[in-house]
Each structure stands twice: as C-alpha cells, then as structure tokens.
Length: 290
Image (cartoon, rainbow, N blue to C red; front, side, top):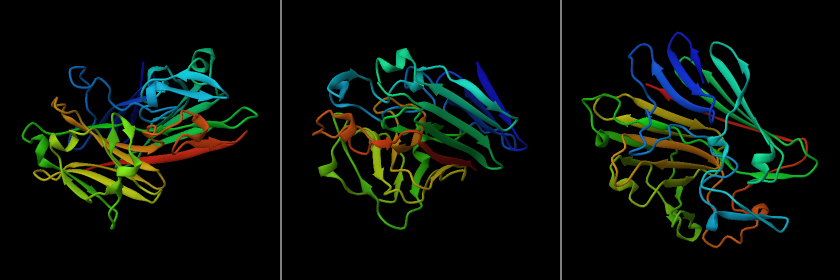
C-alpha cells in the first residue's frame, strides 16, 4: 500500500512498507526526482536507516553481555509501518518494538516518520520515543536516491555536488564498510559526479552538527535537488560502482558505521544516540527541488 500527498506544486508517494519515499514529482515541469528502483543496480529508493546506520563489525553487537546480529542499516526499512496521521499534504507513519524486533534489537522504541509537502519540496521528520524505564541507544538516517540524470538529454557526469558550508568539511573514509576515523581528511566543497567518485564506497562528511545544505545540480539544465539539515551529525553521498545506477543518494545521518577498532559494545558505539526514559528524539531534513 502507498500514501499519496499533493499540493499545488508537487505530488509525492510514500510506501507503508519501510515508510519509504517512492516518488516526488513537480506538477509544473513533470520532472520525477526520485530513483525508480531497479534490482539490477539497487532495488531501494529511500530507505530509513534504523536502529543503525551502516555496518556493524562482524554484523553483530553486544548489549548487557548478550550478542545480537543485525545487517547493514538495520531492520526498519523492511518492516510495515502504520499510518498514524494523514492529510492531503502530510502523513505520519509509525513502527513500534515487538517480539520480532527484539530478536535483533533489545530496546523498546516508538519510531515515527513524517512527510510534509511544501511549495518547493518535502520535509522529512524523525521522531524516536523511549517508552521504557531504561536508556535506549540507536542510530538513524535517511538514504533518498535522486534520479541522475533528470532528463534523457543529460548524462550522469553533467551533475555537480556542492556544499553550502564556507569551510572544508572533514571527510571520513570507509575500510571494508567500517568507519576509519584515523584516516579522516578535509574534503573539497564541490565535486563533479562520476562513477570513479564512488569507487571507494560512500563519501562521508562530518557536518559537526552545523546547518548544511548539499545540492545536486545539472550543469546543463540547471535542474536538481538540495538537501538541508540543521543539526545532522554526518552526510553520506553514494551511488553504485562500477554498476551504472542512474541515481545519487544524499543521506543525512545521526549515526555511523562501526569504527574499525569497535569493541562491539552498543552503548559505546561511535556516534550512537542515547535516549533516556520517557525522552524523545526529534530531527528533520528538507528536500528542495528546482
């Protein structure tokens, strides 16, 4: 099942399975901004990453002396969400802890995703509530894949990535899918999109929780998208290599893959979020299309 949102400017489709954004289309230009998904390259479109972002070392972690196994990016993207609120331009979807989730992740939680159309794009909100008496720990993030190129007359390499920051952001490499903090270096604020750009996996930038906008823009048509955050910890940028998937993902993250020297203790995981009893985590990002 899917939810359809519409205002005078845009139409969006959100799937209840995974609470995944499946379409964002301009009514003025007819441009579709979200990758359609193709298993030959990458079958997803905009999965939510929860309760981890990236990989765990050996795909496992420990809580209170017990070992749990969890695949890359967690399980929320593969679960059905319930609709909790819906209007013509906004929807709120919810996922709660249950017996199946506790086999993978022992904490109680209530996760809500909200999508709300604006005149120029879409605001995506994350809310995590802790209904238990003990602290919970988690990572969360977005993974929206934007169609690149947007029109048949353009090519993948016609696009450019630009950060709004007037300073060079720390760029963190991955080694075998794990975070290599010791090898972090300052990254350039702009880059031309190419396959080679992603040959070493995702580009990951430490945003230092400062307001940041990253834009993906066609140098030919001027069309594109930007993704803005006010306090995200990191931004991932990814596409397939060497496969030629026609998309680029702009990914705001409040969490990160395990470090190469991780000891497996989930409560000590690098960049983990801790939420005390009865507390709530509320963050968002905004997609603007042009």
